[in-house]
Image (cartoon, helix red, strand yellow):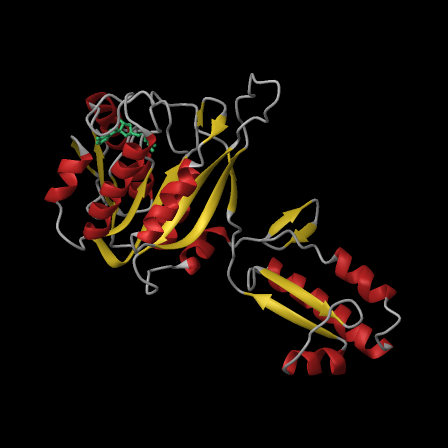
Length: 328
Ligand SMILES: C[S@@+](CC[C@H](N)C(=O)[O-])C[C@H]1O[C@@H](n2cnc3c(N)ncnc32)[C@H](O)[C@@H]1O
């Protein structure tokens, strides 16, 4: 067995039907829910998810579980819902979009529709169809006062991104294009050009030192600012620099699907680490009501968060426990 230090947060795994187990949890007791329910008509054999269900009853079940999730979630909590689409006969059903719309109608706020772009996928066997390579990862919240700590992510991620001696910002800006625009400019005075190029070098140094993660230049004659102080600043100085201290990741996440698991659809660890680090406070509790191989709880444990994982399949619960509690 793994030896835990006294501060280690050990996951709680519960075998059973989420619809029943969730009812035993207290109101507003959970900080963050991350889950991926069974796909429509896939592999599951239980009352709520089975091969005979209609699309309407599938959507209704997700709606029912999301209401329980809302009840157990704190007001500042987050609900991350991973859903993939599927074909019926020859048409995609837009299942994730239909469910997200229902949840919005039901009072949830949709903060982001993250696209998980799978960097490896199975090519389709259909001649007239592209291979499917993405899933949605919706970020729902109950109120606009939700917990969101990008600084926590930064502490882990804000290291200088240097490849072949070239410094890159978090959105891959190297400064080369800006330098060319500034050098070629026939509008900026020599003093404005000199100041802009000096500022550009300082920005790259700040990225290198981890003081900022990104920056943008607005350059007179190249960019337009229609009104306000910035318009005046651009006119007078010939350029404006906008710095961003924190990483602002985009809503498309390129992540390799997990292959090493007994489970048929495991989360990759890096898919759930952002939600855990950014939307669950350090002493908070993460819940996954369809925990499968236990990835959510495993990553919560690695990031020292408490967690609860529920699954109806006893073999998955056994596997999840082994994964978390055995010496690695
Ligand atoms: C898509 S998988 C989740 C995989 C998980 N994200 C992981 O990292 O392994 C859905 C899971 O829901 C479980 N499940 C299906 N119906 C359930 C129910 N009524 N209550 C609890 N779990 C259920 C299945 O056993 C399956 O492991």
